[in-house]
Image 1: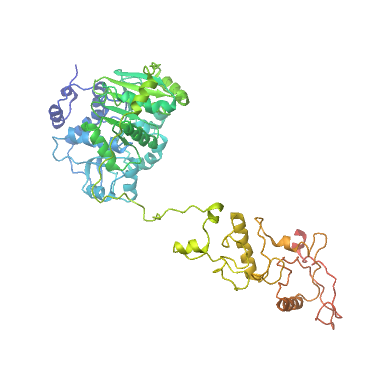
Image 2: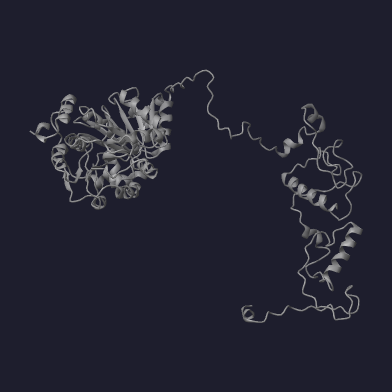
Length: 600
């Protein structure tokens, strides 16, 4: 049997393995480490939980130990790219553990969600191993705070996701900054033919190491699925988590809001859980993982962000509350259990809408997942679960106030009153009792009555305090008021009525100037055009309107388009159409002479 001594690792690295209690390498480690020590490019495919991190970390540290030199300023000797923050942090911890016997070793991890200024300060001194996510590394490169010209080894963990559409563009921008003479390592649990072709663009004469058929799950994972209605999934989850055999469970959902919703509904039946997804801050994500690792919380609800490389001991069950729409994600999800030779169980809840996703998963795995029935007396047990006491709300310190956006108004928007509410108690006496000012409507033309006695409009004559009871009528009245304020006329064009005159009738119909001028200018008869000098006619019309107090165009109707009038003959008068020398005939303007006349 092969042991770590036969792999020719550097003495400091082998000493660290003895401290950690590692004696026998896994299949992927025994096959990959010799080729990596020779400096060959490698593509490693293995199931999750088989030690892929040690397969590239151990030979990398041996290379650093056998070739000691100062790390480059603002640079690194080894660059490791990971798709998620949690996986990047876990890789950096593993590298630090394996290099504990190299006191001068400098390692660092950079990812988003934390202040970039602290990361820049650590990058200035230089590092031997830099673990990063593509997004934050691109930010540092754009700021020119990191240089990649001294990279000797490039490692991509979870290469299938790194080469996916979400990361391929970042990788194409990062690779040109690296030296052409370098060693490149790809490691993943799944590898499709398309991803394999893309990976060939970044590898030079690679060696492919595979310890299991691609896209296969661990043998020790006991898989099963349960067909259930979508509305009953939450009750089935609560009933499943009450099983005493479940020591620690990882629950996967497809969306971020779905994860938060599952946590809230579990709290209603007295089950405590925490959620981890992309909308959580980095501190909350780290705190949730630490609580789950320490055993303070037994249930962790997560999206696929936690399905990549997270190594947590003691996970006995993985529950797919919603099965993934990408078949490869299923392999990574259930790989969180049955790690390091332990046994585990994976349960999937499948509704009618997810049957097609299930077919794709079984086609990828080339395995038919066995179907388990619903628990006996399911409906009866659901009623009992719903009677359980919910979790108490967390205690808040004294003087705690929830955060409120200062831009948000503190008062609530008042609901507009209905017609019946307007009629009830809207007289002046009720307003004066409440300490409010009495309602004052707009005056009717003249300001003879402001509405203090009689309420509202002095000329309205209504008994409801001057306010219309219909909302449409209210809008119509406002438009009439604006109109009358400009022209100083009433509906018939005369002066505004006094309070002694007949009350004005209001209607909900939309008023328009066309309806008022129909009697003067019916459709059959057009208004005759002006003749003679337009300026003179306008002056005369203005004088008439000022004398009569009426608008010159008969209630505001726009004038028809005037045709061009023939100019007066020489010697004629320009005073108007009734004098000699003027002409009432009209003519059309002649087209311009030249090349442009043909375009008209």
